[in-house]
Length: 419
Image 1 (cartoon, rainbow, N blue to C red):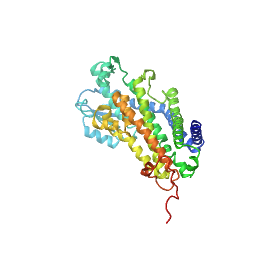
Image 2 (tube, rainbow, N blue to C red):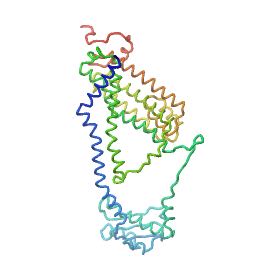
Image 3 (cartoon, one colour):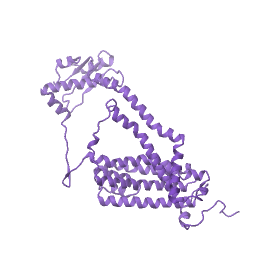
Image 4 (cartoon, one colour):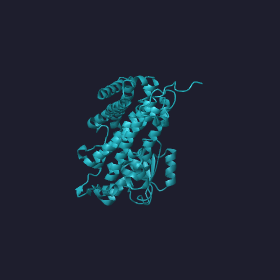
């Protein structure tokens, strides 16, 4: 009977949400906007690329000074330039519109700034001056070195590939870091998409004054667990709808949209970090869900519950202030505090798990802490919901809810003594 009721709650809540027009408007708005943006980028991408190429190959009339002696008049003439010996007059000519541009190369371009003066032709077209000045200097350096290969190597450096080993085996590097960090992305998506609904999951019945009727046929635990499962399923639907246009754009229009190419076949799904990440995700979801449901059960209206949702969002972002320490110095005291404090643990622990800086014993403590505390908070939410089921006009007293016996009757609005 209890299983049947749970299925009924999940089906009712899931179906009711999917039937709401506002749900589909809000959910589809994001992928539609993403698709429109991708379409605009696709249409304008080719013209933008061409403009950048034209800018680098632009032919302009300019004068220049070069105390370093790197640039020859022949090299400058090929790009439309001529030398000058009067920098002040050159700047004045550019300002007066008599000369299009003036390049002031320093004595040592490697350590000093090259100053570029030009007539204003708009933010984008103004970039042509620096592009031509760089092209001229690179041409001069290449001719001095005598080898385009050495010139490119000196300017851009070489490409390196690092191979590291752990426990006698080659570690995956970035390819083994990305998969566990996907749990962190899923955690934030679920909380952002469903957090407000979690908070209001028990408020809707309370505001509609139907809670006491529902509890005559359903156990409070079954009702809340059913709501949570249905919210999670709704979240999966939203994530699927959000990611579909991104995946379509990547696999079918990657070149046109200039998206980076990722070799997904190189990703390494190592069992240890993946299992740890899944358990951290489950524990974090359980804790935040239980907290938001409990907060919703305490408050009489959604408006009053909004402040609690804001506070929970702040807790989600607090660890970002220590992001650099989490990456570079995970043993620092502040990172340790964020790792074991329940409401900052999901972000910090999942990030450290992905980066490989979370020891197994710490992971075990955090997972146990999140699941145990999350379960307790969820039980507390059920207790508060049952006790304050018909307390419509004021906050539920946490002390009173915890102090009453499990089977004590819920208070009614007529419990207050008459004057």
